[in-house]
Length: 187
Image (cartoon, rainbow, N blue to C red; front, side):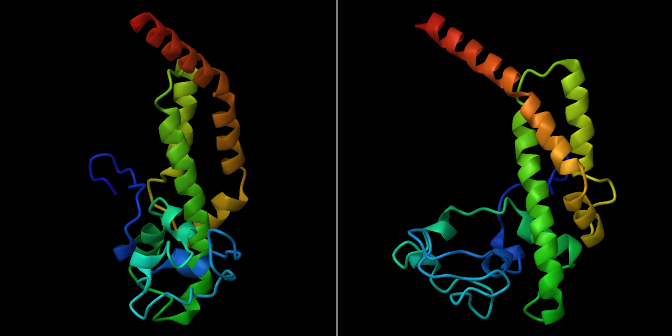
């Protein structure tokens, strides 16, 4: 987390993660992935130290999907904050709970990214207050736990946040129109 704002970094840091994307995510053989992989199965290219053994050759080996994927920092956050640096690799009983927490934290980070973008809009005072209230829900003062992530994911909050974001479409369109007009006047 950024110490000044207590905002989680929405960037991957694979060195602090337990390779959760390489084990939790499923993918189908396609132009993005050279093989099928079910959720919960480690990728065959995941090394013993939880690093990718074909990292510098992913595109040539048919794994462009890996190159374009970002968990927005959810993996390291689950590994470090919720599981105190422990890994499913050392304790197989952690695999399922880590995958569940990863799924929930990915949702939180996806919504945080969208809310960060919404904050850049010229929000009305009421919209700004609602934005702040919902952001507080995404950044609980006591932090996230396996239980709170599960409750969040299964609860009404994600839908409430998505409805709020959808309600900003006209605000975003208005801002785009104003930017076009400003560009036209500058010419």
